[in-house]
Length: 186
Length: 186
Image 1 (cartoon, rainbow over the protein chains, first blue to last red):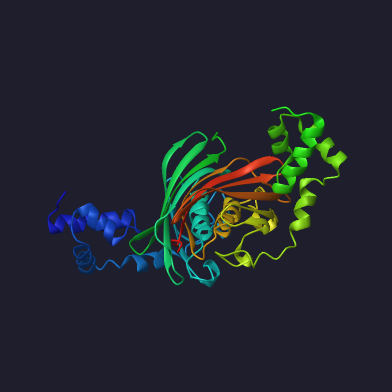
Image 2: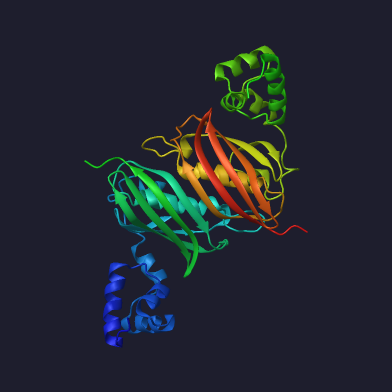
């Protein structure tokens, strides 16, 4: 749906408040405009770019909110969390994460970021992974920052399905669907 | 197929020579006899149990044979390797591998063992994971030893499909199918 500029900008403010880690590309798609238009909108509205928005919330203490594990056991840094809904983390790929030969991030680190985020998002003290289907959609190099977003897409009494998508800037680098067991809620 | 005892024992010796990491349970299934029968056969034939057979080969230097990565980058200890065919590793689950709350091994460690073994088995200097489907079939506790077996099940010029099954003793704890890219062979 196309909006007039003023309407679009109002909607944009709302949307970024609700989902502060939405990328410019995603916003562009939602509004059916170019990424450049979104950048100009943000400039006019004094909304910082995604990277800055992430930094602003990264220093929050999440331990009071996490239920399934302590925050130190999440691989990557949690920057947003709504239990049983969504969670976001960032992981900076360093030398210790890559193959020595080609400096490409090893799959299990991207998996660990995604899987631990899938555990973290669950509002239950017991959360275990049963199955997962995962895709590595492009190699990640040392020095890149991976933003993972976990969304609960289905849930019943003792099973939760979580989709995790991980990006380097606007490029999808990993996606996974995690089928999690949880203890039955009282 | 049922064998007479002598034939079965001859076959058993052959089979263990060919695939030294076969479990008693697998042998029992293959011969259509009980696990107890296999144990008695091994006793009569002076064939050590699986755990001992693993130890005997664990001190080999695999670096001369591995192509896709140095042996230090394999998670777990490689105990058998036939490039483009099969590989086996063992991982002892320690405190650093488990959730602090329930002492259950974190999924990404089992995944890392399996995925790095899937890389290791490939006879090529470039091997990258494209997709995987994985199942965690029962929780693994601290103190348990996980034996992972990677088998190449399909292969064409620049793609290899590898199945990894991980066991604690005779119990399946993880299985995964890994779709790997490799550089095209010359």
